[in-house]
Image 1: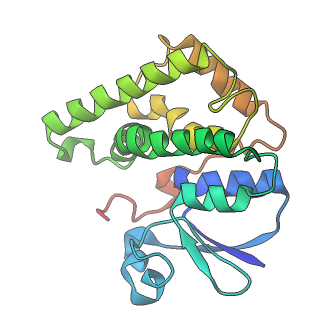
Image 2: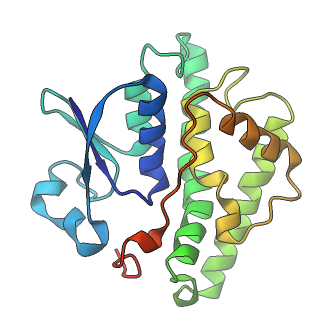
Image 3: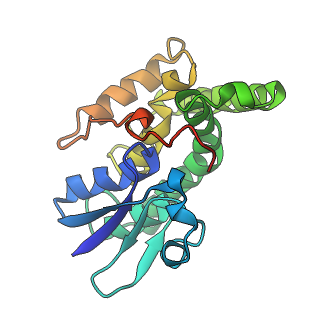
Amino acid sequence: MLTLYDYLPSQNAWKIRQLLQHLQRPYRTRIVSIFEGEGRRDDYRRINPTGAVPAIELEDGRVLAESNAILDYLAQGSAYLPDDAFAQAKVRQWLSFEQQYVEMSIGSLRYWTLTGKLPQRAPALIEAKRGAALRALGILESEFAQRPFAAGEDYSIADIALYAYASRAEDAGLDLGPYPQFRAWVARVQAQPGHLAERYAYDIDPYSGGEL
């Protein structure tokens, strides 16, 4: 059985839980206590060299890290990744966009805000992240005015990846009021069969106020 190395408040880990739910694929969970330093231990670094979550271990012992790479692998041959090469490339385009422009801005701001670290960050850095986050939301607003889902007419792992942090922008203090097309897409994602609506707050982990 597949093993998922997880940390429940992580939206990157949520991506994998969501796809596994859609696929109805059984798995076992191992929680990684990242704020207590478990991610820095040698045994976990053999699973994921960066010490982050998520990661998966296959039945044959092979391991894979980075949330969007895991999505890509697990979705092969399913309805969540197209068969056509160009359509697959479009999905991967949005997986790349999510990592570079959404997680690095909205994800960072959300994490700092929810764990009480925002006052410890330089104001210039916060403003740069806010500017990048608003640009990303503007791009998504424009794109979702043209089609229902990230890579085309069908829901895919691109939507799972983008939803993970972009849909939580209000947690980062960002107003979603000016983005009606984006909010309509959020509703379409939430309407998908098997959508995992449950979220886990960082305060379930008493160590989350520390630095990684």
